[in-house]
Image 1 (spheres, one colour):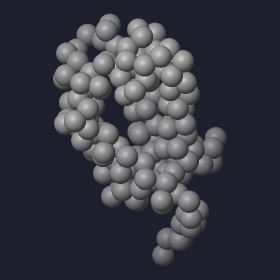
Image 2 (cartoon, one colour; image 1 turned 45 degrees about the vertical axis):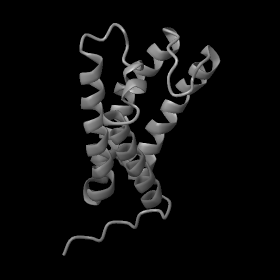
Image 3 (tube, one colour; image 1 turned 135 degrees about the vertical axis):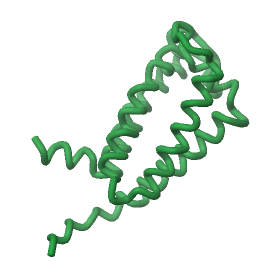
Image 4 (cartoon, helix red, strand yellow; image 1 turned 180 degrees about the vertical axis):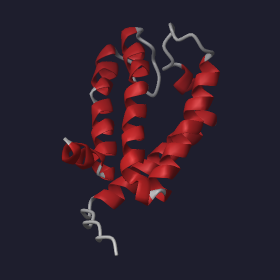
Length: 140
């Protein structure tokens, strides 16, 4: 009989669920009510159509959010993928700041700059809420 895995800290499940629901909500917003706002975050230098990028990233966010909630046994892998996704979309936040694009109520350079510091929080949230950070450290 395989050993029983160590129990998960109590904070992980609610944090994973909150992040999953937030991703699903953001993904739905990509496809509906905030489509124009998300288009404003696509860097001007990005070689694909802004609307296509918003639709595809919205679908990815919905899938990742659902995976965080449903794929409990794969939570470490899903957490690493979600963290990588947050890193991959970070250039959009940098572009919003550097290009001075107003979106999501971020209408000043200071507000857009402060927003940049939230992305690492999301990366760490994904890693901590899924045990991916702990699993990475255990492998080293």
